[in-house]
Amino acid sequence: MLNVPVDLLAAHGRALDVFDVAVHTAGPADWARATPCTSWSVHDLVNHLVTEQRWVPHLLAGATLDEVGTRYDGDQLGSDPIAAWEEAAAAARSAWLEPGALRRTVHVSFGLVPAEEYGWQMTLDLAVHGWDLATALGAPNPVPADLAARLLDVLRPMIDDWQGLGLFDPPVAVGRTAPAPARLVALLGRHPH
Image (cartoon, rainbow, N blue to C red; front, side):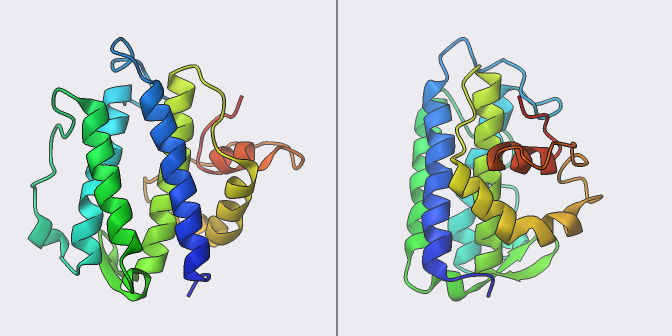
């Protein structure tokens, strides 16, 4: 296992909060804004995270990608993007908190992985996309330094393996004394402010 489950669940909850705060910052005129994610608007970015959260209960329950199928393709935000996010985030968090959830194995696009590894990937995605969303909305970096440092410690070896798979842009150089949130987003191809 990568780390003790309580550590992951705490980190996941904090990363979920990072994205949640950013989503609740978005106003009616913000959904078409560009984000640091190439070719994604605020709407597209939030839709991506809502879709990911909707997959979580299925994957943690043992479903394969084929079993989930295309039910979450397309627009998942409907007429109330914030409500869609809240519903999806609550369902995902509930699934992570089920007894034994972190001891399971889940199907992902590159095979079977321990649920704990999947959980760290989802935590990273929430934190970094929380930064993307906050940046698009003109808000300061919302990722707490201790959360960013923990994600760097746990995920750096995996991130190195993910380079070249199209998951992230190549790393951006930052100084060794840069704060952990800046180093985290730079490692994933973002240009920290």
